[in-house]
Structures are given as C-alpha cells and as structure tokens.
Image (cartoon, rainbow, N blue to C red; front, side, top):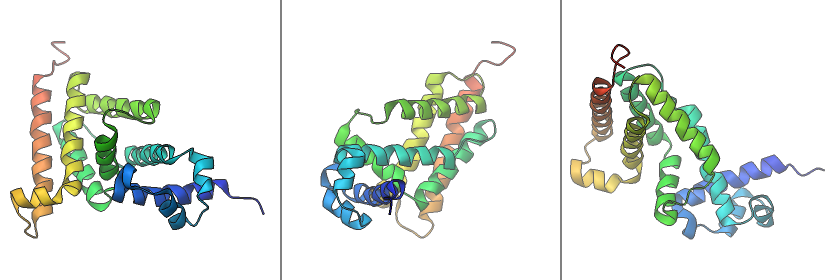
Length: 201
C-alpha cells in the first residue's frame, strides 16, 4: 500500500498549527505534534526538515488561507471598514493567524519566513486597498492595512488587557467590533479626502 504523503503532511500541519498556536515555536514539541497527528515523528524531519521548517510551513499555510477567506471588496472608506469588520469576525471565530503572527513576532522579530509568497500576498492587499481608495499612496495603503491587522489581531490575543480597559460585559465583542469598524472608516475617509483626484492629479 502506497504511503499517502499529502494526507500525512496535512495531518502534521493540522497538529502543528494547534501546538504552535498554544505554545509558540520554543514551547512546541515534535513528539507532541507527531503523537497528535498519529504519525511517526521522523516524517516531520523528512517533509519539513526540522521544527523551524514546520513552523514556517504552518505560518505560510495559515496566511495564504486568510488571503482567500477575507478579501477587500467594494470601494471607498465603507469598503475598508467592511473589510475590517469581516476580518475581526474571522479572527473571533478562528484565532489561528493572529496567534501565529504574535508568536512569530515575539520569537523571531523581523525574521520573516516564506518571504516571496508573503511579499506577494501583502502587495496584493496593498493593491486592493489602493483600488478601494483611488489616489492614496502605497505607503498610506500599507499604514492603513497594518492598522487594520493590528486592531483585528489583538482582539483575540489580548483578551485580559481588553477586559481590564473596557470591561467584560456580554456585549463587549460587538462594542469592540463597532469601535474597530468606526476607527478604520475614519482613517480611510481621511486618506481618501487627502488623495489627489483624477481632475487634479
């Protein structure tokens, strides 16, 4: 019976995603990942090289999936506010990407894995932002996007701080979402107002 390589990789990536989200790169253990996947740990070294290589694969897979699941749609400040709201909702349902990015930042700093693919993904998001807000610069589009990502990613990763600052009443998540959407709308509207129009460009 032939070994199903792709299924084995998928099982390892699923188990590794859970392990890295919970424990980070330093705290994750190859033995636990292999056991959870029901796969011999030697397969990890065979397919991914080492724990760092496996973490790289998990990060790239999670962010690539996110690109497809939450696109920027429409035009104007409303489009960017809508995108922020949908990204916030996505992360409330699945905090995989925010948790992995926070761990990556804490443990690796500016050392980026999967650089070509991630650069292409980021460039695509910047282009979509410029399409939604014609006339804004790439720098402003990038600043707006990192603001959105920071606002949305922090919500599921920093719940204790959120509770300390804003309380834990039953409607807290919806209030936080509304604040994020409002903030992004105002920021996008300010950029759109400052952008040169077709008539004056």
